[in-house]
Image (cartoon, rainbow, N blue to C red; front, side):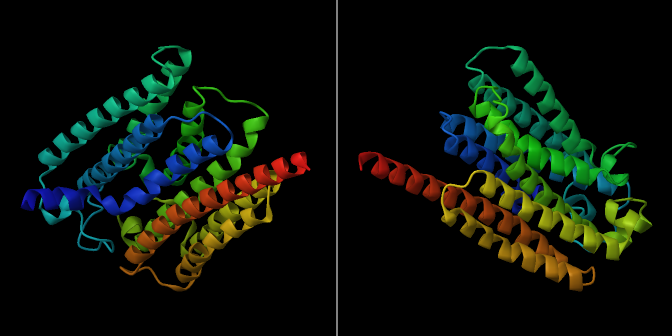
Length: 321
């Protein structure tokens, strides 16, 4: 039981709300667009996203420990290898185990989406899946870890936003993308990507001093604390504007705009980041923002569904009249 608790802690399950947000958004958009969605695709996509997130967390623990970034000056919660609760060898074995889980879940997802046809689209998405696994590991592991050169934000935006939302949307569509009809889906994907990047930015603001001392050149280290706070507002406001444009372009009923109220806790987090010096208090801000993003997705989807129902009902009523 003690070992189980250690591994659960190492997996950092509190980060999972962020991992599932993009999948839920993409699946809901497919449903709202009239696509014949499949629950098994959603379930397998969620499993794959969760496995990838845990893989990333374990690999980050290993990579930062190996580079000496996780030391006595770390502001965030103490990690598994840093605490000595788990050995590097055991961590490597668990990383390999989750790579296997990602492959099994991911291939199963593609097989269902392709109706068993191993076609060109299947191969393309399989390669994308391999890239996602590599990205989860290479954030902090190895001499060319991209998290140490300020590219973490780019990868988070791409995989948590564009790949998660648009990817699962396309999978529900059996690898089909209808242009220009589906072009508006880029906006919610952009919103989730920007908000996910804001989570990483919050983390990097918290760790700015230790990262700088450890030569971990995140965006925050490169541009400085004040500019990182401006950048944080750019991410939050950019996400807000993206959803406003999506609702405007797909307007069915004014009730859709009420979903923007879910940005209130997100913007409140932005004000706290603006005024709070880097400290362990940022741990609570990370959890707050991750849960707020999930709440936003749920509220957005519910009100889009309600608006569609009202629109259909009014259309039928007008036709009957």
